[in-house]
Length: 264
Ligand SMILES: [Zn+2]
Ligand SMILES: [Zn+2]
Image (cartoon, rainbow, N blue to C red; front, side, top):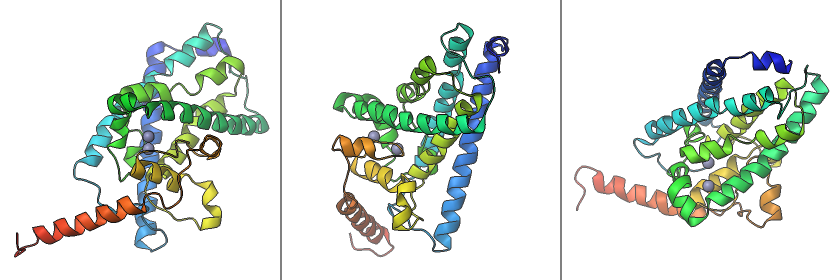
């Protein structure tokens, strides 16, 4: 792919194509994530990480927030497009498989550093109240919590590819696959189930990110845990046990009080 090909694209086509791309991959990832969860739980091959109830109206709110994030991510492709058109960045002309693979690995590691920096900053008390609480409204997460952000958080997270593009000419395929890979892991991180045996859990961020939502702190990383380990913010595996047990006990009390004939 040559810079002049990219320069010939109409900006509206870039923005609309970007929105359509993010909408398509989000719908696919959410539906597959939710479907796999339902099948595995029903077959007894997985267990819910947080067995508490998802409050009424949560998924509808997550859909509204996610729709806005999709528009921001999609229209946000105008920035890298503009960078290529004006010579601030360039893309490699073809997609040699080895180069694509190495670039994707490098982008995934960078994605974790970028995510940790943005995420931990957003946990500053003022930013948490003003911005990041929009995501933390989902305590028991669903696949649709994945893009349920405040618009400012969507803007910050959507900028992940900009710094690397300023210093390296990535293959078009690696740049297109980064959102797919990061979305896949993000949906796994929010789908609220554990299916892997303990020795394979390093492949998944599901337990780590579930703990982050249940405890409202710690485990700020994305897929890998190296940033949390280096910076001392990793949560112990049973960090959420007390809060989940208390939540389940409250749900049981509420169900008993609401039952017909309950003494009030
Ligand atoms: Zn957070
Ligand atoms: Zn989350």
